[in-house]
Image (cartoon, rainbow, N blue to C red):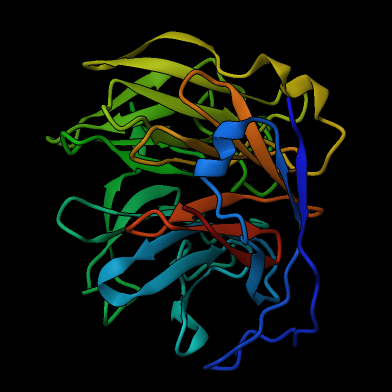
Amino acid sequence: MKYLILIFFVTIYSCNNAQPKNNTVYKTTGTVERLQAELDAIIAEDATGEIISEGFKWSEGPLWIESEKMLLFSDVPKNIVYKWTEKNGTEIYLQPSGYTGTEPNSSKEPGSNGLLLSPDNALVLCQHGNRSMSAMIAPLHTPKANFITLASHYKDKRFSSPNDAAYHNNGELYFTDPPYGLPTQGDADPLKETPINGVYKIKQNGEVVLLVDSITRPNGIAFFPDYKQLIVASSDHKNPNWYIYDVENDALTNGKVFYPEISNTTDKPGLPDGLKINKKGIVFATGPGGIFIFNRQAKLLGKIKLSAPASNLALSADEKILYITNNNQILRVALK
């Protein structure tokens, strides 16, 4: 096995949310660790991890919108969705994003988390503060903090704080519900109503189905291209991992650990959090020390090694760019 470490050289860059608009030279961060020759077909040989935006409290839920040529992402503590474009840099896109109430909110993370597009091209948000899966009632090019609730309860009990989500190709919405949006962010929080931290789906008729109740901190979620299997990340620092399930009607079956060797990496910053799977079945997953890159058989092909904990990922429409929410920064990495 050959190992090749590509070191990204750091250049000077101004720490400012309002970045220069054109011909920007971005500073870079991290290293790429190549563990298998298969990685050569995934990441460009001259790839660099560009820091395209920074200065956030905790960035999350990146989403590339091809029709608008913009990247959206959440700053969960600030209750804001930002947008980034090559032309104009970073701007506020939506505020508030996750908590729209009038009473003071004691949550450390009241904003939106995961962002995605519905089959009819509406922006869907995992809203911590509102404790719901919601959709924005406004066109993407003229955003407004006006939302319709898709689901907020299971068996008359409020969700804790929907975190990440993915659509099945049949239009059903799968999502995770850990307690991170509650004031204490724990299972004993007085505001927690459900006895578990679940993985759910919203059926086409609006019915909410509990799919998994055994993951202590369900987080990122993504389907393989054939929609027959999905992966759910567990961000429990005592038992971090990824789990793979078969998708069968209203159930997730045959659950098992996707990558047992993660225990060898837990001394690094970060946990299994967000993940994305491309059209070829390549898995990009945030984890201890950066981004893990797997093939469908859970072979670790390599890593993008980062010094700060990464939270989530997005792919461009052509899957040639990987966007990373990396603590207080937003990164861009070229792919093949």
